[in-house]
Image 1 (tube, protein in one colour):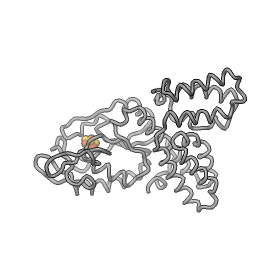
Image 2 (image 1 turned 90 degrees about the vertical axis):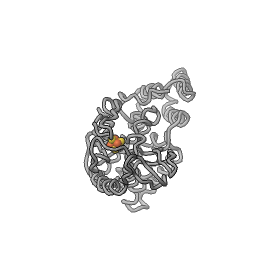
Image 3 (image 1 turned 180 degrees about the vertical axis):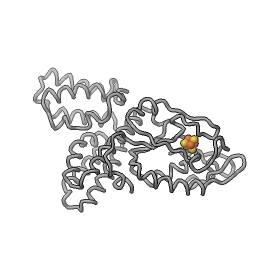
Image 4 (image 1 turned 135 degrees about the vertical axis):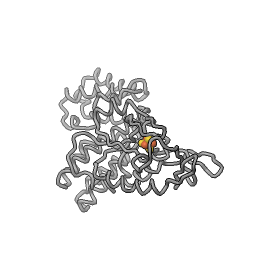
Length: 325
Ligand code: SF4
């Protein structure tokens, strides 16, 4: 798959593919757009977008006849609603060429337009012979993109309005960017070990099982050919971060961190920190509260191993991703 072959250049901004109408481009069938202000005004400060409009780029005009998916949800047809033109082959041929071009773009993620028969990544309506819809489809282009790049994080703009899904997606794109930086360097086991050391607690917050599996993989890195070691590590990394964090998993990580300096703290400060972690576990305060306190103690107790943990700083504070309860 494409991630290894993609990671050949050092990048400054994270590159994300995006359905063009979400950026406010007037490319929809009715000549309108679906501007999403979070994407343009907030996330847009940290990423460079590569806009893609499958329908227009495959040669259809603006405005144009609306389309929908029909038939078997696992391999539907793309058909115009009024004049019943079958656009399936045209779209597939174009999409295969476009994903080959996108391989060169080093994308760290893709944000799709929800519900679109071309761009929707899940639960797109597919109509059966009786004209009844089931929400089980994937847009034609989105399907081909996901099949080509199974480990690249994808989301749609509607799901990104959910703070937890938003945090998870952004954590994954920033992690993939950091991993790509490892891939720009000469392959060597030490670089992966170093990356893993910094990401251990982040991985633990998503999946204790992956944390153990990846620790074992890194411990026996010398037993595997270098390329295979990279390939497995990369797959585990992206799969692990797809597992959702929960207050319980995060609270366990916070307590784990506290273990490093609890003997150095006076009992009243220890008690206060434990109480804050407990409030977070019960979802009465947001994650940013115990994290801020822990930052303070990590510095105060001089814990360089913890200071380098990405978990304490996985994405820009300004995105306020850990401020929700
Ligand atoms: S949903 Fe996709 S195909 Fe439709 S206008 Fe937006 S980018 Fe183009």
